[in-house]
Length: 401
Image 1 (cartoon, rainbow, N blue to C red):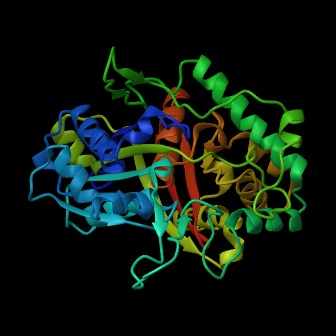
Image 2: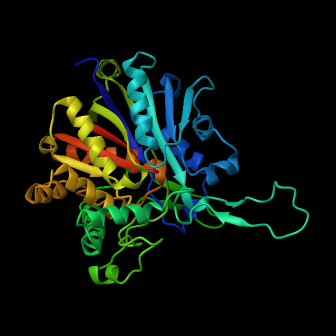
Image 3: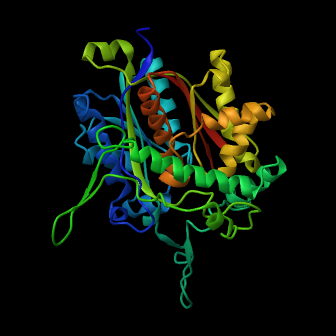
């Protein structure tokens, strides 16, 4: 239909490892790269974009350049000063929330062409000197590591709660380690098969050097070869009963962007849609139940469409922890073990964030574009992408290719 909302371009940077030359970029610099590329690929001029909705949530990094990373990124990218933009911080959900806001803006007629984007650089997060503004005359300055624990005041670390909920649902450490290994192995297979390639999902990042040729990053840096035996020896983190560095994602830098418009506008521009967005819904729940949220968000979106999980050819659930994907797929199965196995087999078929990385606000949009490009390789179909976020928020998008 002419008023269908379609994605006509989708791109991301490679995701860095924790120690990488790429980590010296400001997150809004990474954001500007994908903003420029996502329109350049389809010949859209910066002035044709009505709104940019931009996820950014690692505030200890953003603060190094004060604020409004959305505005900084689009101006760096050469967009007109009149371009409307908004920064969204809904933790890991931020860039899918940005996608949903673009859908809303187009549906109500506020915009014709929108970009949803997200960028974060976790390794660049500053240490916080919390005591400095309290009129200190003598004493040491105490620095706090924003990244340590990844929890919220008054609440348990997210790794602890995800692990506890998984165990309560009969999903133990061994199963989570096996999923972590699966993520790594499927990623390397996908890479060998020519997926995650430059010109499709990936935009190379060129890193100038003081001497010699620049470093050109064309692939994700975090994936690593491992074994179930090696994973089983890793200690749990933050008091979690099951979560380790091997069944959780690393901390990364990265950015992604998608260009959206109506099918009618795409036809006017001579653009072939990559995918149609059928539904986009948020969800929220009791903070402790974060691992369940992707399932509830997907179910809410499917209910709106009068569809079922059985109709989804592929599923992408962000691997905040292996526990999240396993808990959510089990909920989607309705407790049917055979159906659970079938759903898991269709989920994250090229690996997920445990291998690829999880630069917070870029991750949600990454799940959508990874889903799009894989469905296109398979000749089309329906897909669900979902993500959980801090204190049990969630987002889900249903697409058709």
